[in-house]
Image 1: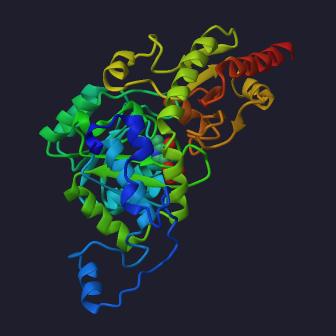
Image 2 (image 1 turned 30 degrees about the vertical axis):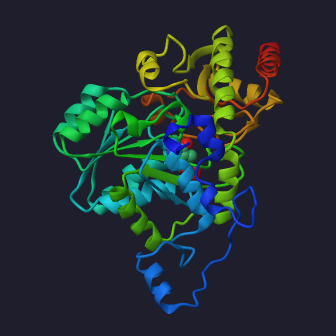
Image 3 (image 1 turned 90 degrees about the vertical axis):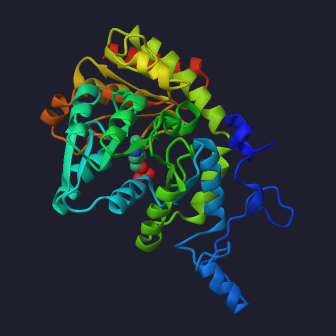
Length: 396
Ligand SMILES: *Cc1c(COP(=O)(O)O)cnc(C)c1O
C-alpha cells in the first residue's frame, strides 16, 4: 500500500518511518550525532554536494528529523516538507526566504500574536509593506491582493475567536495576483483541514501544539512543492533554526495518536461549546461548529471537523475570569494549546498579551474572553468541572 492510498489515521501511525528504522527496531531512533563519518572521500563529496542521499551535519539534516518531515508530507499530501526549532522559526524563515525590501504582503488582523509582531514590528523595518485586513472580510482581502503582493498569508481558524477564512477563494485571489499563498494550519491540524488540496502553495504548523500534542516539545514545519520547500530549507540550513532530534522524536511519537486525539478534542469542543451557551454567566461562545458562528458554512465546506479550540466571554469581565479559572481542576491555566490536557487562559494573558485593553476591544476581544483548548478527557467530567466552577462564581 502506498502512502497516498492510506487514510489519515493509518498515515499518522505508519507513514514516514520505515526508511529510518535500524537494527530491526520497530521505532525510529533518536540520532543525536552532530556529524557523520565517511571513509570514502568521494562518497563524502557526493553526499555533501547533494549527488547522493545521506547526512553530513546536524544543522542541515538528521534522520529522526527527516522521519518527522516524511510523516508530515504524508499527512498534508505534499511533495516536500522541512522543519524548524519552533513554529515562529518556520514563519520567520519563510518570510526571510521570499521577501525583499519593497515587497508587499497581505494578511489578516487576527494572526497568532508572534506572527502579528513580525508584521507590525520586524517586516516594516525591512521596508516590507504589510497590509492587515479584517479577518473574515473576503472582499477586502481580495481587493488588497489585487493591488499586487508577493505573499498572501492566512491563518484559519484564528486565535482566540476562531474566525474562519475561505481558503479556496483566497488561494484563487492570491494566484490571480501572482502571490504565494500560505496558510498557518496549526488550529486546523492535517486531520481536519488540508489547505494544499484547497489550492494554497505552502502550509505550516507549530508542531508544538496539536501535532506533538503532549506539550513537551517545540517545533515547526512547512509543507509544499519541492521547489518552494527547497528554497526555505536552504535559508533554514544556513540560518540555523533547526529542529532538535529529541523534539522530532517526541513529535513523531505524539503524531501516532494525532487522529484519535483530534477526534476526541473536536467532540469535546462541540459539547463544551453547547454547554457554555446554556450558562447565564456566559455572554458569547465562539466555535465554528455552532450554527450561530458567522462562518459556520465555510468551516463546514473546508474542514472535516471543527477543531479543539473555542473561546467564550463571561459577564463581569476580568473579575469573573479571576474567580472562575482558578476553580477549574481539569485544566491547566497556561499559554500553550493542543495538548491532551484541557488548557485555558484569558486572551489578555495569552494570545493578545501585547495589546492594550483598547486595542483588544477594537479587535473584538472582550477582557472577559477565555480561550479553551479542549483536551481528550471524558466530556462529562469536563462539563462537571466547569459546572462547579460556575456555581462557585455565582455563589460569591
Ligand atoms: C503557537 C503558534 C505559533 C507559534 O508556534 P511556536 O511553536 O510557539 O513558535 C504559530 N501559529 C499558531 C496558530 C500558534 O498557535
